[in-house]
Image (cartoon, rainbow, N blue to C red; front, side):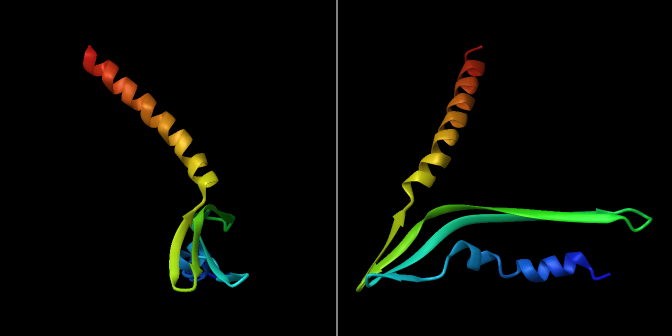
Length: 106
C-alpha cells in the first residue's frame, strides 16, 4: 500500500499559488486574473490491524481580480465576498469589545 501522506504532499505542493491565482482570461481585450483566498486540510489514521482511512477538504473565498487594460493594471475587489466576511467579523469584534468594556467597568 502506498504512503498516503507522501501522495498528498506531492499533490498539495501545487495548491498554493495555482489555487490562489486563477488562469488568465481574455474578455473583449481585457485581461483578468482571478484572485482567491484558499486553504486546505488533510487527515488520516490507522489502527494496529491495518484498518485506516483519511480525508481532506478545502475552501476558497474569491477576493477579486487583477484587471489589465493596455498599460493599466489594477485590482478590483469582490464586494460580495468582502461583505460576507466583514459582517460576521464586525459582529464578533463588537461583541468581544462590549464584554471587555463591561469587564473593565467592574
